[in-house]
Every structure is written in C-alpha cells, then in structure tokens.
Image: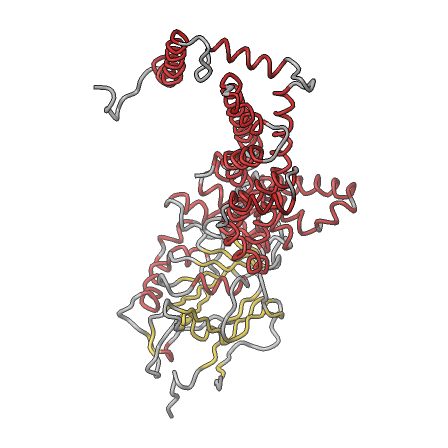
Amino acid sequence: MGLFNIHARPGKTVSFLLSIALFLAGIAAYAVISQARHRENPQDKVVPTFSAMADGLKRAAFEKDRDGEYRLPVDTIASLRRFLISLALLSLAVLLGLQMGVFPYFELIFLRFITFFDKIPALAVLPILFILFGLGEISKVALILIGVFPTIALDTYLRAKDVPREQTTKALTLGAGQFEIAYKIIFPQVFPAVLNTIRLNFKAMILFLIAGESLAATVGLGYRIFVVRRYVAMDIIIPYVIWMSLLAFLADFLVRLWIKKRYKWVALEK
Amino acid sequence: MNNIEIDKAKQGDKPHVLVLEDVVKRYPDQTGKYFTVLNDIDFRVSAGEFVTVVGPSGCGKSTLLRLILGSEKPQQGKILFAGQPVVSPDRDRGIVFQKYSLFPHLTVLENLVFGLDVDAYSIVGRFLHPFRYRQSCKEYRHQALAYLERVGLEEHKDKYPQQLSGGMQQRVAIAQASIMKPRILLMDEPFGALDYSTRQDMQLFILEQWERTHMTIFFVTHDLEEAIFLGSRIIVLTQYYRTDSRKNEGAKIVTDLDIPAPYPRTSAFKCSEEMRKLILKIREDGLDPEHRQHIKDFDLSHQDAFRTINPEEWQLRE
C-alpha cells in the first residue's frame, strides 16, 4: 500500500518516527547481541555493553592515564589541530583555483600540472612523505593536502570559469580593474559553492588524517584507536568512532550554517 | 581594400561618438574554416541619438554590439569611439544584456554602488584614504538611492536581483549602467526575455530615461515594432541582399533611416499608419529572405550613414 506509493504524504509524527527507526533498530540489535554474548562469556571484549563503553569513555575523558593525561581531550586537540592547519592551508588552493579561473597565464601554468597531481593516490605517497619529512606533524598535514588540495583548486577553477562572461564585461564597463573583477565579482560568487565542496571533502581529509595518525603519531584520535586495537579495547574504540563522527557532523553542520547565514543570495539562485 | 568611397555626410558637423568603417567579422566553424558574419559595415553615430538595430536572427546584431563594446575584435576595419580605437570594454560604454547584467551576490543598492565605488577607488586607495573612502561610500549610497527612486524601485533596494521580476531586474540593470553616465549605452535585446505587457512598459520606461538624459543609446533587438517605436534612427542588418560578386557572405546594413516620428512617443504611435508603412518597408528591405535587394538599391538615407564600396560587389557600369 504505502511503501511504493509515490503520492504518500505521511504526517509529522510518522515522518519523525520513520526517520529515527533505523537508528533505534541498530542500537536495539547491538544491545541484544551484546547481552547474548555476555551471557555466554562475561569477559567478552568484542561487543562491549553500553555500561562498559560509558565506563571506557569516562576513563578516557575524565581520568588521567598513566602519563597523567586526559586522553580523549588531548587526542581531540591534536587531531583537530592537524585538521585545522590543513584547512587553513587549503585556502591557498581556493586562491590558486581562482587565479587559474580568472587569469589565462595562471591557467596555462597550473592547469595541466594540478590535473595530473590530482591523479596521484595520496596514500601511495605516504612512505615518501615519511622519508622526506620524518614521522612528525609535517607528513600528516602534507598527506591531507596532497589528498584534497588539487580537488579544491580544480573545483574553484571550474566554478570561476563558469561565471558568465557577461559579468566580467559588465564589471569592466563599470570601471572595475582586473583585481576587482577577481576579488569583488568572481570570488564572492564562487566562494559559497567552494565552501560546500570543502565541506564535502571533510570526509576525505579525516580519512587521510586517520591514515597518517595510524602509522606515525604519538597522540591523536586515529592513533588511539589503532593503539588500543592491540588490546581489543572495543569499549574505547567504539566511543572514539562515535566521537569522531559527531565532530565531523558538527564541522559539516557549521559550514552549512555559515553558507546559509552569510550568503543568503545562494538560496535564491535557480 | 581598394574601395571607392561614396560619402554624403557633410564634413565639419559635430564630431561623431562612434565611427565604424570597413568592419569585417569572421568566426571559425567546427572545421576551423572561417565564415563571414559581418561584411563591410560602415556607419557613424552622433551624440544623443537613439539607434536601434534590427535584423533576422543570426545576422550578427549582437556580434556588432560586442565589437562596439570591445569584448570582441574585428578581423578588418576600424572602430573608433570618441576618436580612439576600441580596445576592450571600458567605462565609456555601458551595457545592458538580456541576462547576467546584475551581480547576483549584491543587493540592488550594492549593484548600483559597485560602479561608483570601483571607478573612483583602486583596491589600494580604499586603504590609503579610509576616512575619505567612508565619506564617498555614503555619497554613493545617496546617489544610488536617487537613481533607484527615479526607476521606481527604492523599496526594493535591499533585495537581491533574483528576488525581483524580470522587468524590475532590467530596470535595475539600466540604472546600474546609466548611473556611471557612459558616453553610449549599449543594449543587447534587453527586453527579449520579458512578457508582452512588461515589454511595453519597459519601452516607455527607456524612452522616458532617454528623453530625460539624452544619452546616446545603441539598442539591438529582433522585434521590428520595438525598433521603430524606440529609435530616432533605425539600422537594418541582414544577410538577405544581392551583389555583383558571386560570393555573398555575411550581413550588411541594407537600410539606415531617420525615424521621423516626434518624441515624446506614446503607444498610439504603434497603431499609426506611419508605423504600418515602416514595418512593411523594413520587412521587405531586410527580413524577407525571398526578397533580396541589390547592393545599389540600399536605402542609406540617414545623414550619418555612409559606405565604402567594394568594386567586386558593385560593378559600376556607365
């Protein structure tokens, strides 16, 4: 009846319940499995109970470890720092893409190179990075940048190219100079869309971050889950994974909010 | 070109804002071979004229406008604006396109202020004279508001262009271009995307603006009635004509007339006998592919019209 009806318009309550149904089902299934396993073996570590995970989270977040550190906050700050540094450096990608889209010489010099650069699998470069930059912070940030810099630059370039020529002509007839066209006409028109691309690339950035951390780090969210894996500490890993997902969701949400509030005209397009 | 000039314009008149002579524009097709779009275009425009250009689709009206604007270059011939060759678009020549004239990321008021701002201040200048800049910005807003009032849109000043109807957008675009007081205002089918009644309103609106400021307007349209209704002078550009040479490529100006009807014009002009006659004449001159005038019969009676003749195309016989 309802399921395959394209005209279906369920009410508010039903819509809400349906949208959270799978979350609830997942949690319930987990609880059932966890309980069943603990009934057989009270020492089971693979599917920890909720209380074990809450306990693990509490220990990681609010109790000092043997080095006298609060692990979760320290890990979070370390990972966040790497993420934010990469993000700041990505603004250079936006800048480069803009120049390429606006000024033909930049396009000629960079387009082919960046397009080729974009095809290099970032993870395959990781050993080279470790050899060149050692196991420190630089390698990890470099990995993230190699992974997403070309994507962001090319995206900005394509969008800048897509701005109708009439806009440039129009600005010239109003007395605008080259830089005013680049920074007052083209840039503000493409920036919201570029922000959106950066937002969608958060996932790739986090992926490269965890990859880097898992191989060479002494602190960080990605580092931690790989370390405690040795002890099958699922009560730590699962809360960490959920925490990371929440952070990613939050970052995504904040950027979406920024676009919506700051660039009201974007929603009016089309 | 080894041309014989037939020039009836009197020397010593007031200087012409715009002079085109022997202008040829070609484009490459998919195979890289060039085909001619505009074939030997000559004309002059005096200041204060409302020139309308009409012709069948694909005749190169918009190309002609882009050449004058400077966003494209001719293969041959010269285009002089105020005595200087046209190099690229600049603030002397304003433009209103059918679409994309307004900046979507700026509000209506900001769209008007933009030109005043960038024209007076460089990027560095804004920082070097912060106090003076702030003062100027206030002034620009006042000026822009005055213009918006004139086009009847002051209550929409804080909206984005996308929130306005098509007619209102074009009003803003006209205000945005004319606030810079360009020496000529180029318009490329500005009302082409509007519905019939909005179009009528906009025609009266642009006439009103023109009569008030007497700016020079170069107006491209495919609507014959619109061209006659608005223009003080009409230029008919068409690829439908005959010459004595076998190849016969690209559009020429076949008609260039003074439209005698006095201003202010009202909608009544559209129903007049005069309008009917002009429409019939121009349709036959330029818009009917069956009827092709010979090059020697072109009606270039406007006082600013002139042409250079290619002897291959017009073999003068005794």
